[in-house]
Length: 235
Image (cartoon, rainbow, N blue to C red; front, side, top):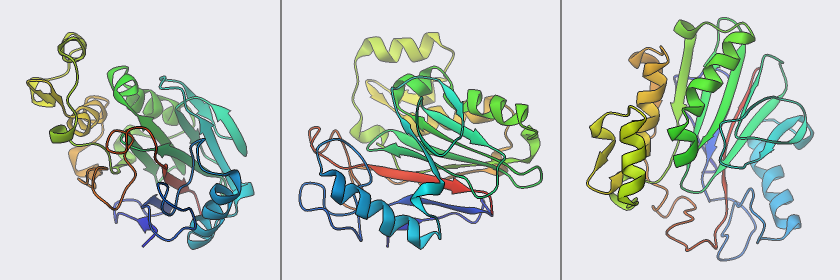
């Protein structure tokens, strides 16, 4: 199975797994990004995966991700930043991850979508809330936005420094977002979208850790790994 989807988002979307591609180990097999695998493998994997969603690569807006809080207006091809928004039909937006959390956003009523790459820096800077604000600028309503949180590293697998825990505490994140030095990016991102005005009923989480064998994990694989994608497109 190449894609995992949620009933909560009613347009074309998915979170990719590592299955159903052509890359050899350690990128086995559906590697959709990174710089260590060959460009030919990545291109073929993207073609295979996007074909399942009836999307052509020429329709995709994706990112050179820099662990920022920058949100870009989507356009076909690559931009620099960590989130994308659009109200254009037929323009797919994609974010990559391999422990960081991919978030997808959809306002079905007003026809606006977003996608965000949420590592600890983006989470700390509330990039999810920034994405919501940019969607509202395009005509979305906060009360109409649904959010899907894809696979990412779990609290149990994510030990960080005491200094980083302190940064989250000082930034106003609740204490349930960590335990000792175990940081819970899933809970932290859920807190950010709820704080931004999204209804709890409109937030869905996959609740899967990228250290599981179905996914790529930068930490588990010590930096030598592939990339997953979160993709969404207005029909």
